[in-house]
Image (tube, rainbow, N blue to C red):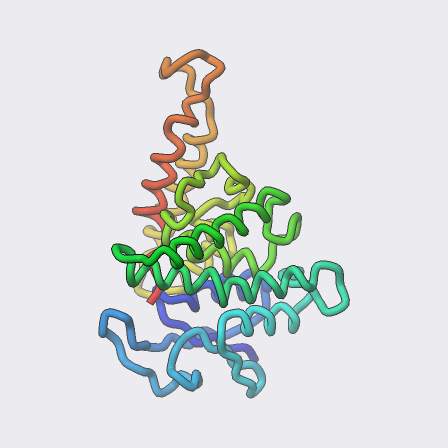
Length: 260
């Protein structure tokens, strides 16, 4: 049996989404964790050696670390198509993206979260490099692996959702960013929405529905031509005026909270 050890408002929320996508039976064990702000405490029921989340239990085995859990799940349940099996074309790229998330994307997010007002030039260059690599990949297809949605998209998209300013000057219509079809917040995808409902049992269903409705409304507004507003010649679509503003607003106020 699968069991995910999870704490609301943490990175383990990404694995609720992945498990929903895989469609496999699993339990969710809600744990307390020590937060960066000093709140919380280690939870004795958590099998993680450092009492952190996520941790995965499967038939007596314990898996920790985000990239390892993602790889373990997609290798264990390959028919869902969320990974690339050994021997298949694209395996190398899939592994590279999982490790790139762990070694590059997530550390950049952490540095920006902790030291946003005093980032050193090297960290700023690292952030630019991360954005450039993701943007380049999405310029070649709708997902990091081209036409295949995978666990890599679930992981790598997280920091861009939690920190909408990470992408800098990239807005949904430029540099391939729009090619990530869900757009931040990416987990309005049905399994992602379901995972949000389960992430925090205390949160209301209405709040989840409102966030999802708000995002779809934003997508409609930024994508639809609005000539009646007379913002310019009929050939100029109003979405070019409003998209960056709406993108920022809905990410700031309707996206999931940051991670612990």
